[in-house]
Length: 521
Image (cartoon, rainbow, N blue to C red; front, side, top):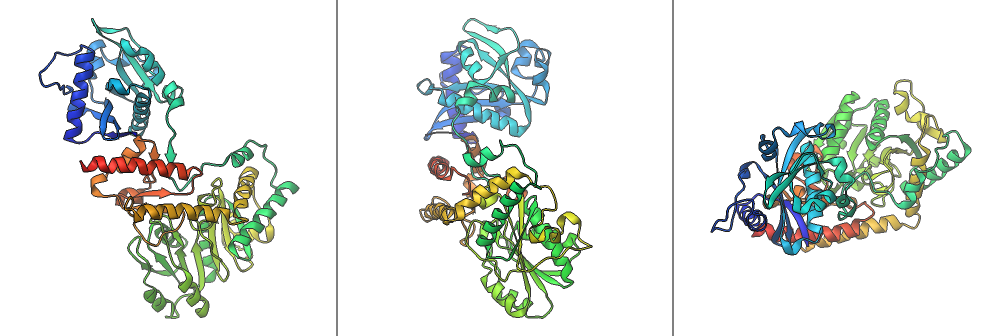
């Protein structure tokens, strides 16, 4: 298996020095011979090396640096003088030491290095890269997207052409067209099925039309059957909007409540409630830890509270909170239960009967385009004179269509909901989750919590593989780790909602096997 990473260890730098010597001393006579058979680049301390390995062997490399002067500056003066305007939009970097062992020059390694280069340069904010391209490989450089911008430099067998590469040129290159598939494990947005993509090629229809009204009615019916609730209110927006509308309704209760927090989205509920001026106390646990239900019971039986607000599926930790005992106790005490089900709705079967308010969204587990927010209730909601109009669920009651919706988003959602008629979507997600659990049993993965659910898992990343997320991306695997709360805790996540999960996870496990074995050396 070919895979890519950033070089960081003395052992890797030694292998780089050997490949540097083989290529730029023995093959291209650019430097003098040396009995060590190694050559350390003069800019080694400033270089970032992207390397490709065949299982455990280094077979290709490329180096980047952005310190001036570049080696090209020394040969031809400041490179900006010769570069076209398109290459001057952003910071420049220089590429050096592009090399692949002779017995691995099959195109795959070059293309992998090119993609890794493009990914890394984009994340670093580089606008363009320059390189001294050997005249021996001008065709290859052209396939990677490089363009010449100056006359050849050097002499004898070591003649080079000044070349540059932009993101746009790479994306239009042969390398980009033939690069291996990239796999994502993000919890959204979803990669849409072919059928769902087609609806966005249709002309939009008016939200006042009979056709739209009929589609909306079918969607409402399917959602209510899934949820077991009495009423559904659909808004054009994200899950955060749904929670905002839910909390706006809580303000009408004129009572104090309890907010349960054991993750980032419990924290967000607390922040939203604070902005709305709600009176509440919190019960907070460490992220990923279950709630102490004796403590919850003690609070609720105090007689001080009229409502409770909590997150069901806590996306930040991959934890499914056990809400059954809370619902039972609250129903006995007449306390209204309000739940953020944005990540759990559509992932696991559960009923919202006897819930006061609950939220969901079209993206996430349902697998449709993000942008349709849902609020369920078991009571009729009347219009309010104090809640902002767009957030007032009373405006959406009884099937009303108060504001503009996207007909394409609604059609996409209807298609996605069709997968729940015979529970196919639930079964698919559960099968995928069992695959993840088997990987944990086999000690290939380690999860943050044992109370997970089939939407997303949070991985414990060992200290020895702290660079795992970056290196996985360079090899074509996008783990979810960009959210600030994940960065702070050095957590990584795998979502299992994307259409190609089976293929992606199989290839990721193979990559992870090689990565862990390599890191142990």
